[in-house]
Length: 83
Image (tube, rainbow, N blue to C red; front, side, top):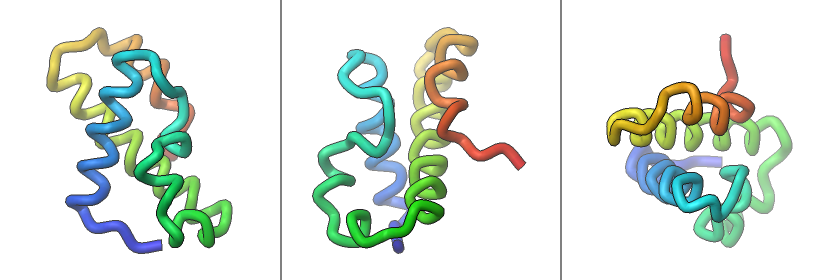
């Protein structure tokens, strides 16, 4: 699955907004992601990798906007792959 940096940033902002408004919990629930054919065809590892990248963008956006660090990390850390 190929997403450009612009795609990831866009989906990250959408995910950050959805988290802020308590609309969705997982990046996999984003309508803009679910409708992509490459997402539907991707294997589990690829999906987890994309979700981690989207969650990372969302985390950075929410922290930049001044949201509580602990709350933000609690919401997104389950999707970010730590090395």
